[in-house]
Image 1 (cartoon, rainbow, N blue to C red):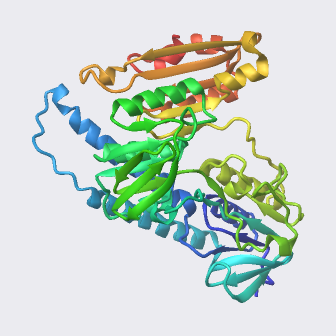
Image 2: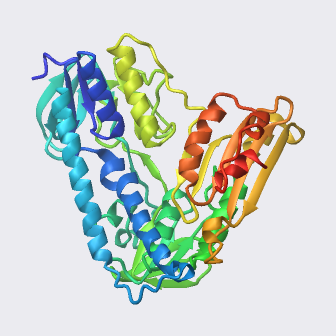
Image 3: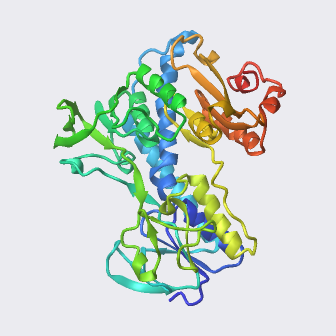
Length: 452
């Protein structure tokens, strides 16, 4: 089977789907293997359903502010189970769309789990790691199986949730403990709080959102605490006891937290288990598939894209990596992905978005005397009448010698929408003077970027 194929793709997530469809457009005969639902982490159990829950949480905040605008709402009944059902229905709709896109592109979808049985063959199993029912061969292979949540080895961890589980819940308990400091932990802490849940977030280190600009991370922390999330810094959960629905999280300092659920948002890792990489001779580096700038592994005809390579683990990056692979190999148009300037966002409350170097990164690269930081912090007009809610923080990090904007950062409403456009300017090498001579659009939050 598969003698007439030009490419076999393992994994029908963002990167695999993009590569398969682009390669087919270039005339390649493509098969894509998936043992789970088509759409991958982003569509099925990641950014899409998560953003829908973010909107659900925001709707409650808007209702709470209604009286500030002269609106008397009266009693409002919250039906979280209905919201969760609606989110799952939208995921089902998108899953069906992606199935149709593959068929329209002429990509053969094969249901099953794939693993290398040799460098030139893929075995297909009904269960991951199970008996091989058939094999495929092709001159090219692409591994795009993504990543999976990582769990700490503590007693009772089997009673906890990972982020995947949150979208399968029928309802949310009255109190939840969230473990972790990254964007997934912060986003779910804010979603749950917005849905009326009492949330305690346990953070091992001294701050949230390591890797992001520290001042922005502190602004997010202030906003989360203002809305009632209890954030415990420099604490760890060492054990979870009880039964689902009635749990106790034991902390390293001897204290305990009673709750209805514990979310372990303690990171994600490339999903390398049962891929048969050793049989294919594919090198693994620090728990990830090592690739070069062309997404090529240690075996020339085997490539890898997306989270399994652990480069920049974002959906648009995986998509571009997949398309660049297909363009280079099947479109005869050599193209590489620029991983150096990628905008990113944290859909917490308040929202954070950023592109370019943080203040810390800029100082490390150019020295403390080589960097100028401009910032504006204020309460937006949207919060003027309610007279509550987090303050906005806008920040430009500028190289002093050239006046070039090295980083553009924001915490506040619509931060991701605003930074997406700012990313174009930063990518083109805009200077602070370019920002300054841009006429402000008033009144808006984003005008502060051109008036500070």
